[in-house]
Image (cartoon, rainbow, N blue to C red; front, top):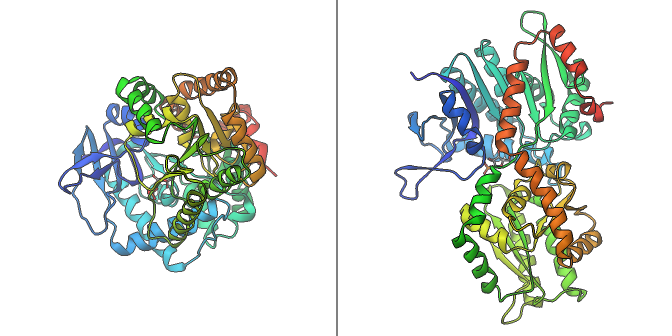
Length: 487
Ligand code: F6P
């Protein structure tokens, strides 16, 4: 059996079935791009679900990666993925924007499926190797893996927010989840505030001591080891966006998009998975009111809203789709003319080339998330703006706001404030656009996804196996801003 020195464990494999159902093709996500160099240099394997229920696939090689599919039965998809992951943890961790459902049968399935992922990772990891677990679907894997394979180094990265203690404590299985995560040597979060919320939950629920970013965890031998819980904000493969934006065919496509919309003076753009955390309703409300107030007409500006299909069998997502589509229909019915539209709504997913053409066509990018771990679309937009033009309107509740202070930061709940920001963005002089965009682009290009994975993996190799005494010195010498949210 193949053994790998470096193993990624994620809910999904980095490939999808080709449309004919025969072969595999790379899925669009940025994670595989980020991890590719490490996967290649370290003889890497990737453990994950192939995205279809009841399909048993043997491990196989793809693009120099060893892929290990984990089979999910239709009932696992329903209880573990749609249920506990996306109807319990997802809404709870996104500040209860939609009420989380707590069902014991979903939890049982989550435990069972997490064991399956941990078993698969334990089987493929080489002696003394490194396993990097990704995201909220697999929070129990670090502990399960440590029990099976104490020889390996375990990292975990949490791509979504970690909620404030008052919300987290609703979770009936709150202790088990914290213990699950603490099986890792390093637990990475998007924001300093997420790491602070996690440390606080650990202190309150488990009574473990924390020192700066270190958490003292009792180990199996009666001693103490130190786990590092810290922010490592994720990013994108910025250069690949720059390269696409430089392509003449993509620039031409951007011009065609503008013409296809009837050459409005400005194009506003929203790009999201169709998810209630993204603030699409708030954005539509604000835009509808701007038109209603007569502060803009459909000849002045069109909003293009790409809402890619997501989790379509979960109730809250079905309801959201109905609401959004009704609102779009109403606004368009009230304001469209035969030549111009208020909102061009696209319930579809597009390849990266088309997305970059849209970014180049858009004068204003609207990111109005009510809560978002990071929001990579904000980074993709600025990376694509090689002309240093365009305005990013960014929710302060998206993790990206911590790094992108030169955007127009907004509170999406404040509809009047959002409307003012939209008008300000539409009217922003080119010189101010340039000043802001240059600062934003510098940050995204310097801190790209490779920088992110390198930073995390360096921390992981430095921290693994730290005795509490050795780590004490390190955490005490470390930065104290991680303590910002401490009690
Ligand atoms: O980070 C959020 C996340 O859930 C990822 O884990 C996942 O890759 C992405 O959003 C898409 O979600 P899903 O896998 O449920 O389609």
